Length: 249
Image (cartoon, rainbow, N blue to C red; front, side, top):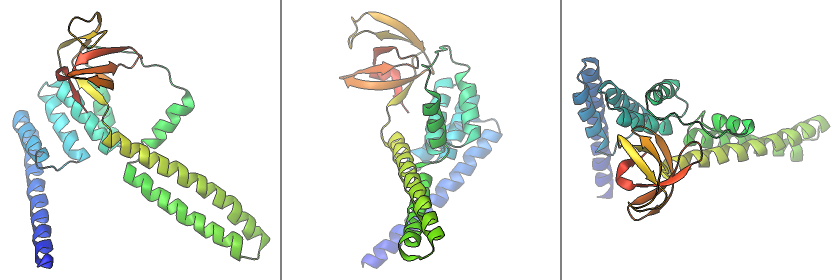
């Protein structure tokens, strides 16, 4: 009985994926025909089924961009980047969309090594880094075998030094994998959706007005209190906004 249930579940999954694939192609055709709102509706309908992909969010973002909905475009480009951090087209379109936002906030300067590490980490997804980490671990075992079981001094030295290198590579790649996974699981960035958003000094409407943000600006969520979110912008400035004014990436 369990065997038939498994087969039935597998059949439904395959049928569902095929149906969503056809719907995705339908959305692409609507986009090509210039029917951007219809394309948005079609892509969004796919997302309601629980299906997600970088390409789906990217195409949805493009449709929003063409439809003149900048905040929604940026939101979905950001979601696409989370799933395909190495995709140059997504990054280019995201930068293009950000160039059209009102707020031009200078980021806090990062140490060049930290920026280099982040850029390297974003070259691949969590799964890809995990596969590389597993491969590095297997090579470590091979090098250990050379060191312990081969009589040649040259091979022993090679196994030792290469093994050290692969151990370090294993730690780095698995750390990158975990970091990329956390970016997907812990969504602590958001996009401003209010045309003009007043950021307060405290989590209430009577708080002092600190600064104003506009639609499409990216913020980092630091903490929450009721319906209020404490946010930080790229230059390090912190304040409070109502939860309804932003959408989590």
